[in-house]
Amino acid sequence: MKNFKARGLLAVIILSAAIVGCGVQDKPENNPGSTTAPTASPSPEPTPALNEREAIIYLTDVELSETVEHSVKLTYEENIDLVKATLAELQKDAGEKELVLWKPIEIKSVELADGLVTLDIHLPDEARLGAPGEQLVLETLQKTLFQFDFVQAIELLVDGEKIETLMGHVELEHPMKREEAASNQ
Image (cartoon, rainbow, N blue to C red; front, side, top):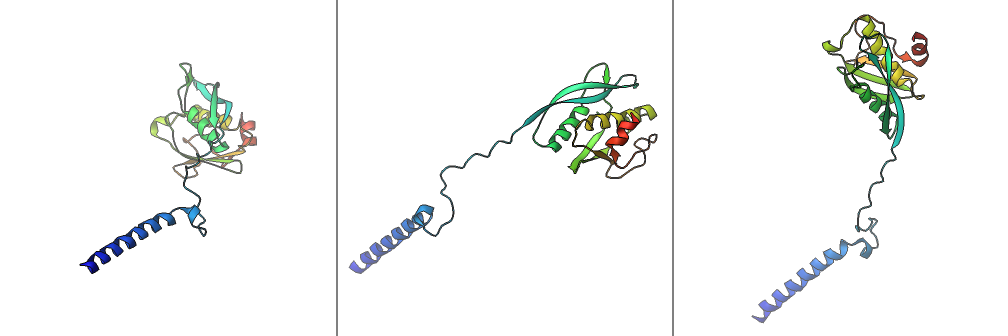
């Protein structure tokens, strides 16, 4: 019976030592070979610095005869964010006397690399216009994006493809360059 109690006591001591030992190993400050930092409290992620900028969004008048300027304030972190925010504004309603030609156009993706904005869109039937409307769609895009010095060219794709004309009337340049846009206006 003494032998049985001694074994039980020995088992309890070994088990206690194992539990205490495991607890000690989990603490990096007690383990000299450990390279992990103490798990006190996680440091908060730094908040990215947001920039704010006034920009002009170009829309058209309701007669589709000329572009109309609409001033907006944009918040962004990097240049690509500014381009995306600008395009989102280009699709918003602005007023009763202004027509938003980009509203029905689905923007599938936007990329910015080395001054080139690559814009992939889907053009539903309700977004298709005659020649003057097509010219204004392109003009409002160019004027809106080329106001930023870092945008030197725009590659406009429809469903991932380079096409000859956007709506069948105006020939597209691949890419549309800042100089060409200025001379066409």
